Length: 507
Image (cartoon, rainbow, N blue to C red; front, top):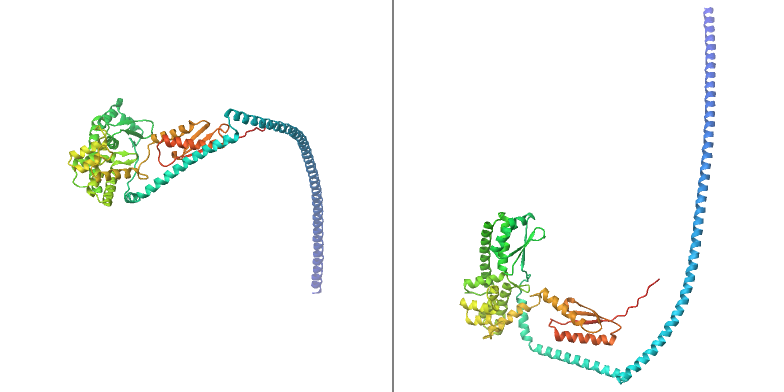
């Protein structure tokens, strides 16, 4: 037992010794590992320190290089600025020298100008004396004579003003008649249309032009022969123009061409058929227009042929005013005027509707349209008093009744009321040219321009030939010449412009 215990104790002791030895061995190993790690850390720290030192040295070198570059750049800039300042100073010195030279030149020129002014004054005095010796009168006497002429012109202007006042007073006596006319104008108005002699037909494509012309032009010749209008094929894209001074033929041609384009079969035989059909359609439209015009005007019991001729006025214009609409308007105005003055309303209404009937046949029958229309009305059983009103509305014959005077008055109101008719371009251009030519014919006029649609003439004169007083007299003389030689509505303003221009050059 004791041996067992001793053996156990010795075993435990041996185990303890072994354990202690093992622990010492582990501690030694850990100590060695720690020393090795410490050595590695120290080595890495030394390496990083060397790298940091190298980086710091590189940064210092880089900063030094940049500082040197910046210093060099600033040194160059300063050198450039110094050069610029030097150049500017030299330029300023030169300009200052030039300014001094100019000042001296100006002083010399001023002395020359003063000397010339004194010479001119002496010459002016001598010229005045020469004029006085040549004219046989002094300057004061010449001024008095000029003032007398101005006073005479002023008296003439006063006489004209007095005449205008007298005319205004005379017009005031006609106030009642004017009120009647204005009332009729306000109660009746018609549309305004353009005065044209050509119609444009739109084509679907430009290839259609070749089909309309046809082989060797046979289609276009057949169309012109059948319709009686001229076909103009030019460079206008997708369009042709039909031209004729006969408005009915032009309308027939327009409708026929549009129907041919829609139909697509374009050859001489088909053209004759289409033109015939278009002519029938236009005749139907004319009859309907005549019936509608008579109905609108309130005129009854007219012959069908007379209504057909009246309907042709649907395609006639006069100074931008449709003649059929003008006839209906004249009928209404004549009826209202007749009612105001106690005349026969129905006679005046019929005379107003038929007064321009002859314009429907002016391309076919010789003579004034008033006489032609009166003969037509007489042929179809219109009362003789109406026939006289138609025949006399332009004074081809004497007026035999009050209704004839009313028809003439209504015709004038319808054509002359504001906005009813437009002046043709040709007459307008002639009037503008005439105004400018009159102004240009006077001595001393350099340029003249008619503006404001011919209601003002602006005239530029040569200042060395026309002075201020002569400008006033020139404006009056031109205005008098215009009054004596031209006919124009309203009044024409004459403005004379005289200006002196001084020009010099900077060198």
